[in-house]
Length: 205
Image (cartoon, rainbow, N blue to C red; front, side, top):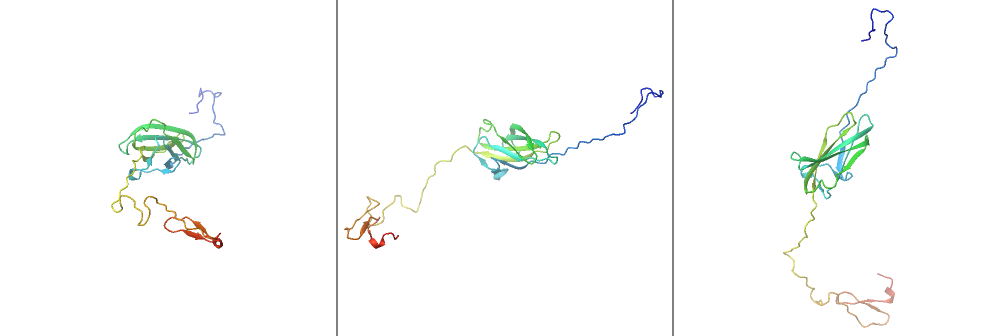
């Protein structure tokens, strides 16, 4: 209320300024993070039977953040151990000053993913005044155990390799030479025959 200190005193008065200003600050809610993935986007977000195997205990998580108002955003990531619906949070972090439309990326620190099994992660975007909802539920399975050596068996092949009939079993490569004749070069070949190469054949193959 615009009120004078003494309403019955004509020398005590108030009046409105002639240049009033109404200022409204409107803030849009950030968009949902998109293009979630791991290892620089090489491993897309998936869950269930489609969940990827990851061979590192320090994977990189990322997602694209955006805001209709533009500006800089903050992304929060949360990592859980276990499958969706039966997991518990083991780590969270935030990364700030991400331009709208850019990727926010973090690396899971060493010492958190210590056991093989299924993990899942999610993220949201914030502009400092409003937050998007959580998105993701991206599962991955950690496998740090190398497979065992393969074994090969066969029911249709002999247990040991044998030379074809007529070959010398003590030497797999048999060289035979013929008496050198004028104008001919005798070349050793594998098998029971030798090849003769005439001068006029030189340069031809």
